[in-house]
Length: 108
Length: 120
Picture 1: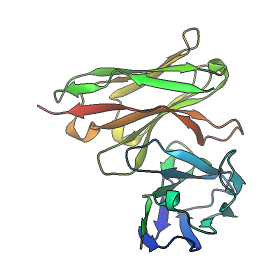
Picture 2: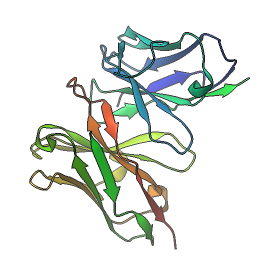
Picture 3: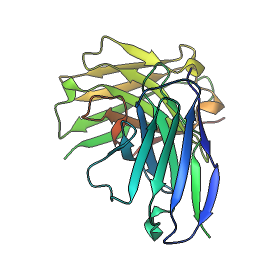
């Protein structure tokens, strides 16, 4: 099974900061990677699909990049509503479909 | 508007069974792959099962070891998860999720989730 390792596991940042979260796959997955945002008690929300495509309705301050084994999610200027947990997910090779362990983004 | 509404969760004793349902609306259900994803309390997301649009292909997480069965009824726009021999570690919120319109198996739409608690 392909393992996804996110770093950092948690992160403290301030409104207006530029933030980058990394997701590393245990083997190459081309661009078959998605990013989700989940707020406490809420349903996960798709942000980025196919590594770099912004889902409709998602603010342009979110961006994704990478291919192969190394991927990043960048938030260019943090807003108060962005404090949440972020997950990467691969869908290149399955079963199983796998998620990263999550990155908790907290207010500094 | 795409809507996915899960039902069937609840409290069950270890070794018991539950059948989860997911009612879909707002899209042509029969052409989309569907999945179940779960989240244990305070934990991350865990993929559970996949079913192709026709229902002919199903996949499961290894951790389920044959205890769960996914199915669908395209005539009723419904997805199901039969869960048998439930264990405490199956306690989680269970989400049904539709794949994204792009064709990749990422999850563009999620239901609100139904909680399952396995406890005596």
